[in-house]
Length: 160
Image (cartoon, rainbow, N blue to C red):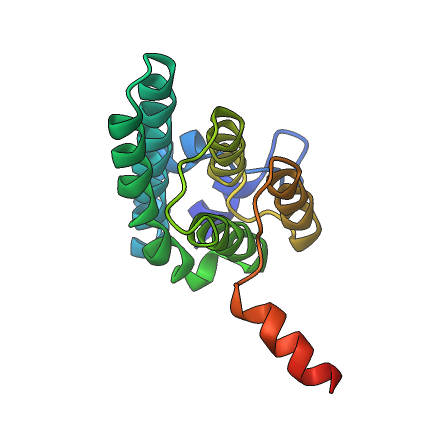
């Protein structure tokens, strides 16, 4: 346990941000779930980068395929409870964003926003919920709907 605390402390003696690179270097102190998150996030970021590259060479089929490969990793990431509410809020917003498109292709701006959100939680997996809200707002700014589609019906029902 002593090593785990030393790893989390910055040079000033207080706990700072932990990046995925730090997690990779400290693999011996990671839980199996943290190791899984590290690998899943690396794969997800790789897929979204592949989608951006395919979009840039005007290959919409390859771009969509890469998005689909990234999309299937998201439920496993959401189930990583130890990562915290902020982490799961960003993953949930991404899942809802993709599902609410109903199969429509993503724009380059939307792909870039997804990459930024994934990079953010990759660099700061235990981000505070308030930061997750900021990331969610950034997704909305590029045209994503981040709430579950059923939420509208539930809210209408609760208003009655």
